[in-house]
Length: 238
Image (cartoon, rainbow, N blue to C red; front, side, top):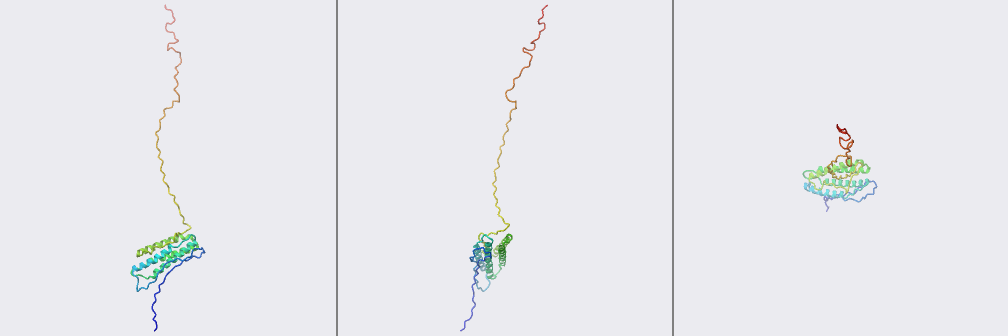
């Protein structure tokens, strides 16, 4: 009796490993566990609720993997971290696409936004490899815009986990033009109130000391008739 051949459903598991930029930086190259999504054979497209549930599981694993990446401090270490993040988000996008189109509305807006995130991560990785720090600020702004669009599209579709893009722990973008300005708070000072003083009226200046005594006029003493001879004075009576 000859055996008949049956149709075999194969469960596929996606695992992204750490991708290291070829700069010889000595960065830890241990594997990063990422998205693990099994392919399920279905008779038709997933319902919207089932699609969201499975997609959220994929996105949650992806975010956790990205959050475990250590960005490093040198350009080579940051290039390695960016390459790892890019590998995770690419696998996330492939895993979501493998679910097929669900019933009803399509999540194409989110998938497109996630593709833009991948494109900006690719630009950032290339700039770090080349040491092109001058373009990192522009790339970072474009990456922020792409991630914001992904969050908005995910929320609009009804995802709960997708759109929460992970970030390497302590990640920061170093640019040639970026600087940190520390503003020292100014402590307000209490104005000094000047109390007006009442002016003291000084007495008129007399020249100092006691007033000088008044000297009488010269001309002798004894009044107005002194020294004169009265009429008939000294004469003999007839």
